[in-house]
Image 1 (tube, rainbow, N blue to C red):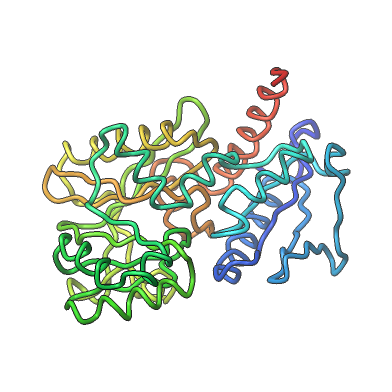
Image 2 (tube, rainbow, N blue to C red):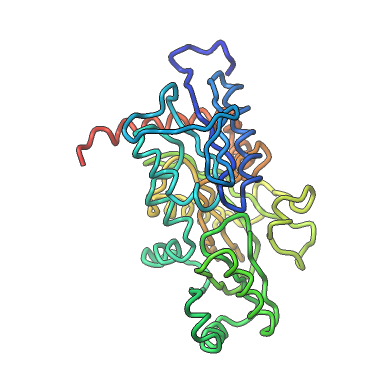
Length: 340
């Protein structure tokens, strides 16, 4: 598409980037790519940076809003925000109060998928297979660290210690020996008062992209290959250092595992109440598939996994963005039909 598209198809879109979380810079890169892609398809774009101080600015001008008044001059909002205060339902709640269409999951689905404990409990209630895990609160750790360590010993080693409500592998530690568990928990609690400790899963890491509302389209699965080989793991540096990882598409897994991944990606998306988009992450060992997590606003540059998997599935980046805008408008229009 280009700028000569029918004027009825052109939208005025506010693209939000940055945010208060530790993923601020990652979000800015995603937002810049989304803004460029939307302009390429012929849309008008307003780039908004959500500062680390929480203030929204466009062209160095602070923005303010009134609930129920919409966003004057804007048809759709594309919140390309990662992590807390952006991907966790907070910004989605603000946009709901403004009554403006926005791309991606709503308040509840955003919050549920951001919280790794809530998400895993939701999947467990549906009988969806996943790795064994334990939740630890900062208060538990403060009052009875020895008891916490005894409980975590049931998971065996190695384990992964993660802040429960962050993304991009921020604050995550891999524990190979029992003596490493205490400092890993201490580090994770710097970022979040709720921590999840997961048993190590065998096999390879596979990711799958999902697009749509009620009847989501699922991409071909891709395999994460780390430059560090079997000794490495998919941490922050692996995700964002050039050359540290490769995406192999399609994933080198059996036909049965491939279809299982795609089926579970769709089921997790629907059961979480997601709309618009998500990236589902898995561990695959032979035909055994375990769900790891669901990201409602994954990295969104043209080379990020989400877009790359759909490009390999026949949906190029600009078309992907265009569809997401339309899904946002469709969802908003449908919601307006209810009185609540």
